[in-house]
Amino acid sequence: MKIAFLTPEFPHPKTGKSGGIGTSIFNLSKALVGLGHEVSVIIYGQDVDAYFQDNNIHFYKVKNIKVKGLSLLLTQNKVARLLNSLYKSGKIDIVEAPDWTGFTAFVNIKCPLIIRQNGSDTYFCHLDKRPVKFKNKFLEKRALKKANGIISVSAFTGHLTNELFGLNRAFTVIPNSIDAQIFTPEHPNNNTLRILYFGTLIRKKGLFELPKIFNLVKEKHEDVELVLVGKDSGDVKTGASSTWELIKPLFSKTAIKHVHYMGTVSYSKIQDLIKGATVCVFPTFAEALPVSWLEAMAMEKAIVASNIGWATEMIEDGKEGFLVHPTNHKHYAACILELLENLEKRHQFGVAAREKVKAKFSHDLVAKQSVAFYKSIIDCV
Image (cartoon, rainbow, N blue to C red):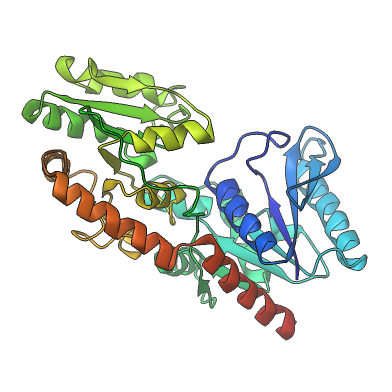
């Protein structure tokens, strides 16, 4: 099968930085190629129009057209022409795109189109309790309505998306995935107790709760440090340009001395940091099915994460990790302390978490599920 992914991001040196959407497409593309399928990735919002091939994947960079008031529509038409050309020439059989901002709302193509729900702007605004732009909600709803098929990375995301848009679209749950052979467990012999958060520094991921949680941990356990890794982000609520600068004063005078913010680091460096962590924390309010959790789970790390919606589809509380609401600071801190002080519990959670990843979130398994879904759509169109 010849599968195309339309995306605003992909983690490749020639296509710029990428977040969770790009990482999930990267993992799936790699697995699809390994199964003998042909993959094309069309990335819009690029600096130039270009084509290149790498690791048996075809890449098409698309430069957005900039005309005041017409940029989006003209770029959508440009992408549609490219996709229709690839389809007509037999280079692609089906296209998959994310639901984020509804880019495909006015992309009119002749081949089947799949939307994979990794979380729309409407979805994240709802979870983050802030208003969504009318334009984004309109485009996202139109894109979902005109798609030939819908994949959702979690049942929670699929059901909530239908509710928010007033839709009743059928969807198939196929989760995000990782290559568990790359994220392998390693337990270095060091005595440093280290709590690790990795991801964007942004309000919706619970970064304003984390200082309050760490302050409580630090009161009970002096020999612990907190490491933060990820891109600093502006804050929608206050308009400030740096979340890191906003949260620093929230740490106690004692705690802040043991907080290390490393900014963005390379993909390989992230793995080293996960290996060196005692506990990984994800006190987020808004996700769909985060790849970062899977990476920590695959490396047999004890996790304390949010208990909202999607979380129970990834982790069973008390079996593969602890799930706690981010605003329950005392309980969250207590769970972290329990893991810091109980090596056997950390090991138990870590082993169970890796087995869960291998059984449900393996990139080969998810690729096979995706191909079966693609075939069912192609046969019906």
